Amino acid sequence: MGVTYHRNDFVDDAAATISVRAKAFNYGLGCFGGVRGYWDERQKELYVFRLGDHVERLFESAHILGLEPTVSREDVAGVICELLRRNDAREDHYVRPLFFVDSDELSPTLTDVPTSLSVYCLPLGRYFKSESIDLCVSSWRRVADNAIPARAKPTGAYLNSALARAEAKRNGFDDAIVLTESGEVSEASAAHLFMVRRGELVSPPSTADNLEGVTRRSILELALAAPLNLKVVERRISRTELYVADEVFLSGTAAEVTPVASIDRRRIGTGKVGPVTTAIAERFRSVARGGDAGFASWLTPVWGREAKRSAAAS
Image 1 (cartoon, rainbow, N blue to C red):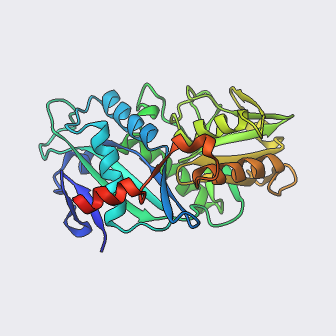
Image 2: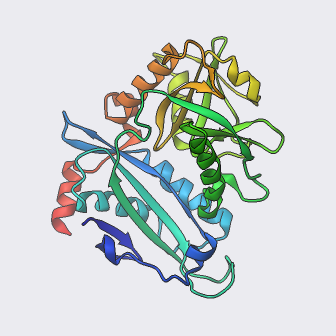
């Protein structure tokens, strides 16, 4: 049994419970984040990837929803690292911090209600098990930002993602691409999308009703920098433009960099993993596991000397 952080304490997983009457359970009132820890076998170290950025986005999500956490950003970052230590995390891990409305009253309200924090973690290697995946364009459209704010990563909004992915799975695909109400590419069910076409790396803008992704931003920064030095464009993408792309891949905390082999049963490029996707994936893996001192600021070590002293003192 593992350890979870729940309502200001570290408890056994089984003790991290809420009432069936809880607003968070009944109405999906909350917001969450997804954080990766990457194990470097050479250094015997677990690196949390862009911890500060993930925590900042979690608090921005809470602010958009009008939630008022009683913990600080530093508190949440500290909880995440301590949780990984208490679970003896010495392999790749996924961490889920969650702010939720901690009330049992009967009404879907976000005002004058307490906000609590829960954080759990689990070992996670590849999210998609195959080398490349097959996608379809979903009949479900992405919920508009003016209806449910996409950049807030709210828990209730992921029904939209679940419906799109379920439709894809039932039709023999690995995942779905969702379009905006105006018919342009937004993202996959729970990952961002990149397209390589005519020498450019193209991504839909964050105004296309998608999440402001930390992994997406990281890939854009890595693509622009040496040694990749790619031409990067953020613009609208139409459905049919994906069919004639040279390469397509997904990105996200869970998905990392996942190549796409086909969309709507149309082969993308050669149908094999392309050179740009390969280069970006290799660069991302190297940076995430501490292989580039130039990006050391992106990584928070869990088992470093300071962490060990802190754990011994607690």
